[in-house]
Length: 335
Image (tube, rainbow, N blue to C red; front, side, top):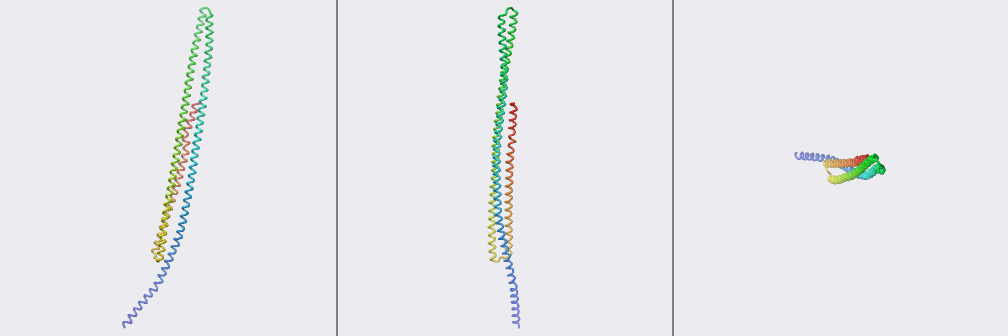
């Protein structure tokens, strides 16, 4: 009686086990199908994202290269234009000032010398005429004194002679004073011309020094601009290296996904892959943000350098103003 009961119990257990196995197999197959579909979806999304990332990288590299070339060309053109304009303005200003000072000095000196010479010549002529007239009067008086008789006539002739001699002495003294005044005026004119020439040479030296200073500052700004461009190139190289590393990591992930697919990986591996992809995308976005900030900083530095060059170009006429004031003062002094 016990053997049939044991047999029935064993059969019941086997039937239950087979039923549970038959129920679990479809569930496992459904779960496996779902995992495969999720893996295929993830792979397709990853492929599309990778293609989009490659296109974005190409567009970004082309855009950065175009912007860099455009900014560099603009900066070179602007600097060359400013340099040529500064040199042209320097040359024109120097030539105008030189011509004006030379003309003013020559005309003023000639006019002053002619005026003083004419005055001195006229005074000398008048003094010589008066001296000749007095000599003639003295000769006539001497002749008249010789021919005259009597003490009264002799005394009168002696008084006239003494008077004429006194006038001759006074005229000679006046002539000597006029000659001394002429010599003093001539020496003063020479000293004034020497001072004006010294001022002109000093202003010429200042302008040459100012031109050298402006050229040095321009070369310094060009060196800073080139260093900024080298920094941008280094940042681009670093970005390309990091992009290549991210690409290699993505390829490794694809390889792992393929191996996981062949081995029928579970849901935890898929979640890990998605998290890894998300981190890589965030990292690449951060690198693009850093590159954009670097490009913006380079553009601001270029604007600052251009502003400095423009300020330097505007500062040069202000520095040349004392030279113009000195020229005006020299012309007034000569007049």
